[in-house]
Image (cartoon, rainbow, N blue to C red; front, side):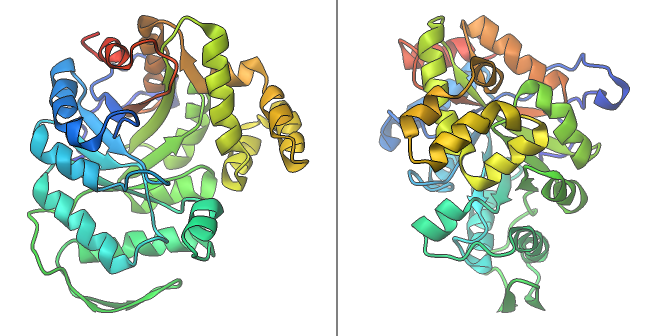
Length: 338
């Protein structure tokens, strides 16, 4: 996938013009309640519905690459991307090998999204050390730029050293590299050294502030959490659970402090630190849930997603939350063909 090739219209956010049109429309896979062996049918159906992209995450469920390998062979029209795989949980060489494998399976259709992840995933779950995340991401981008061309890499970076690595299989072209970013330093790194940025857990109205740090002429991928139901109470409860799980992690808390949401989240953070999880969830204001979780009827959800695009996102990627009465129907109704 040649993300960064101008396949999406770039909104003229710097000039206050917000009339862009969705030309890329993605969804997060694999679907939690669908066995991986059944995903080939789903990937074919997603393409029929007008979804152009499928993107994976990587935390404690499926890894970021295997579902995309299935998609590459099941639906050759889909664009594929990782959003994201951590730079700490694989060595640099292995990360280059997996990216090259996907680029060979899906030439011109794959993008590698990498990020620092969080101390929870790196240290608690993977016995790593979450040191100097900015430098580690920067060094990994620089290494991958060289390694994915097939060049032999023998270099010392600030956070690791690679001696004599060269890919054993040639690929037609290196895939684009995106950086997951939350605050100005990493956002600027994404704009300066990568092909674009990947955003997560932000409201449509937050997009201009974030995209301004990335700069123009870069792809901006955003995971957008969607709960397609008219049951507002159900949607808000599902949303509160997701917000509490993520926004109490240090990197996301700092992100929302920077966005100016600190006063609204103070009650949640204080209750969470005190060990009262129930009170923390209850302390999340409705206005925060309604800003961060897209909910309502499928047409209303699509209109809300369009606001992200109007404000500067070039590749919206839906993450469909539990709450819909019929998940398969919801995916269809949320689609461009819905």
